[in-house]
Length: 56
Image (cartoon, rainbow, N blue to C red):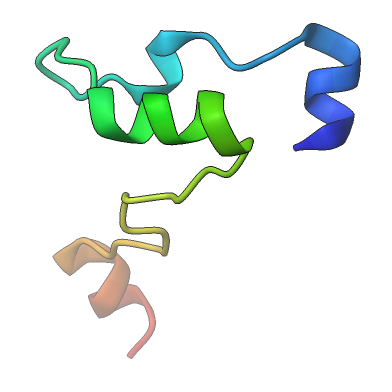
């Protein structure tokens, strides 16, 4: 985070916005007060049936 903030400044509210455009106010406020960010999205590969068939 520090490298990003050094280059671009504090994270804008859009970083705390869901797919419907709603800001997670609690997470954004926590970031503003503490500088901490917790990722809430699922990170990892997703496979389609074609991907699975190709690996067999």
